[in-house]
Amino acid sequence: MSEDTLRMRAVATGEAERKAPPVTEPAARRDAFFDNAKYLAIVLVAIGHSWEPLRDGSRAAGALYMVVYAFHMPAFIVISGYFSRSFDASPGRIRRLVTGLAVPYVVFETAYTLFTRWTDQEPDRPVSLLDPLYLTWFLAALFIWRLTTPIWQRVRWPLPIALVIAMLATLSPSIGNDLDLQRALQFLPYFVLGLLLRPEHFHLVRRRAARILAVPVFAGALAVAYWAVPRMSGAWFYHRDSAAELEAPSWYGPVMTLVTFGCSMVLVACFLAWVPGRRTWFTALGAGTLYGYLLHGFVAQGSKFWGWYEPAWVHRPLGEIVVTVAAAALVTVLCTPPVRRVFRWVMEPDMTWAFRRDARAGAGTQRRTRVSGPSHRS
Image (cartoon, rainbow, N blue to C red):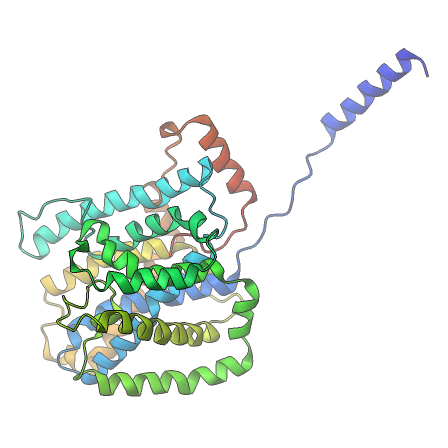
């Protein structure tokens, strides 16, 4: 074959390659099960906050509050860990970590401080980025957990080590409030467990037998919580204080770490067993749970200042139902696309100008190839 013929064939082949459309993989659909789980969990978070002022006058409300707090944040954290398995500290993922967690943390830590200066009548409350206020602790904790992901993926016994760290944290009241490290350490095992889970583990809890078993388990949990309300503090499920700060003997801390971890994980499994796996009317709202989480806090904080809980009827059964429905409706609205469009500039800022070219390119590649699903926005 002559050299001219080879050159003509190469040119023809190059033209064909230039004209041929690029082969791309079809965009992966979000997993409806996890979006449903995130939406239902954020609804429980809002409902739990709405029940807080009702606990003193109602033992039943106190029991429901304790049960919900035993599993709603653990469920969020487990799912966050599960979808952090691919975090490798690459430039693009670091960029996503900064824009998706660090920037919202700074903005909402400042906003909550300014807002509560008014609602709590504390005009001198300082803006401190080291002492997370109200809901912002989760952003700070998730930032820390995700940065440590490569470590947990390489050690031999990640979950036992994380549990030991959580147990030791309860022994030390001197850890302090910097980045709410006490809570980050005590909730760490839930995140590490999420890193270890695989799709088949979630399939196990979604079987019909698991859904049926979840009914008596939740009923038993409510009965135990009803008994426990006047006898113990539900603060053990907050994981924000040491044993000494809860006025308990030191040995209570490690023991309660294991007890609450076991109880929480059983209830998380029961909760996930009830989550529908098909697309529903609220599936799309699962992508906006960070919006609902951070924005509903302003209403939760302001409701007491505005006197919404002062009428006597609010503390009766009908009032408690109204408060519950109102909280669920509010957080649902805050997860909708119109609200997300309004606040995307702060929740998901582009900030291309702040990063070097390799980080920008890496983030772009991730956006094109990553499987859509629950991310850190839990």
